[in-house]
Length: 269
Image (cartoon, rainbow, N blue to C red; front, side, top):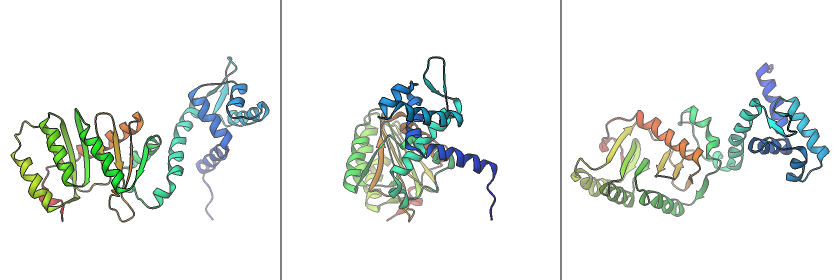
């Protein structure tokens, strides 16, 4: 039988404290604003005695402390733990989605920050997703950054229009990016004829592990289904600063590793 390591035991002890909905709520509340027991009792519709008992457990666990002002404050340990609650909150909220999708190709350092997606909107259905993507792209005024899993004609026309109106367009495609031949034949010829002064740059990577759409103030991401194909019918979208930064950082990761774009190396159908 596997003997639990000391680190595993300590983690289990922490999870035991966080398993209480009230204690987790108290931790999140004081992470925003330190408060007295009476305030917390009113906020959670609980007795002062009940709040006192649960705060004491958090104090014993080293997560909070009472200062001279009488308010409950997070310790630095508590602050770091509270930040990780968003990770589990996001996963629990979308547990059904993650039963049907995989994120294995995305670098570990981004998976560790997946809680950044907590405050974004989840949109499901191909029609709704495509409508939102059109709004993101057509509403861009300065720079559009996209990592494309599947090309579609209207998107190509929007990108050309943006580029001709002095909007910088940075795009990433992969060998697994689906490029319909009719789009290559029509849109491709237009792009080839565009003057080099137009602000359009494209890089190519071996594989697209997520689809990204980032405008001046809003971002969206799509993940692969269990077959490994980007699900065009489900999207996380929003303008929350943490989510926006996560999407931009992921784009930069692939952009820095991108090479020369050769449309013949994409998946042409």
